[in-house]
Length: 74
Image 1 (cartoon, helix red, strand yellow):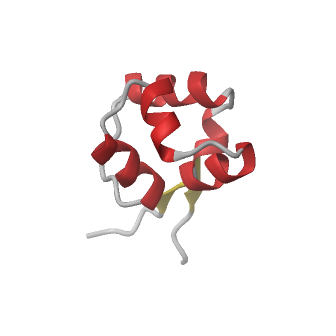
Image 2 (image 1 turned 30 degrees about the vertical axis):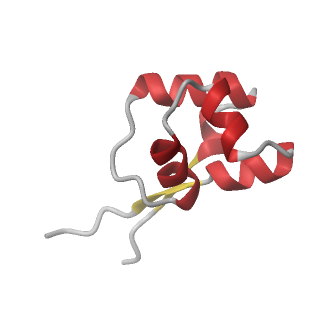
Image 3 (image 1 turned 180 degrees about the vertical axis):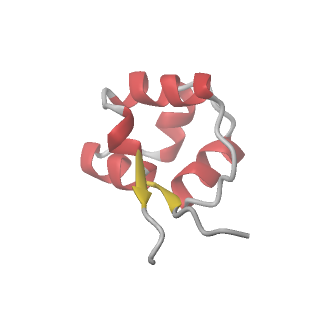
């Protein structure tokens, strides 16, 4: 299988910068605790586009604040 790089979730970093707890994000973005924990821990493997939109709205940020693409090393 070819290495295409990876996507890094930076939700926890944004939460820390904005001093927002995971619990508060849960209510602001209408997410379950388990979802918030996976997003903040970077262990989520799939993210719905609606969830990304809710995160951007709740955190008043851009998608690039939440996700980072790391290219594959050649």
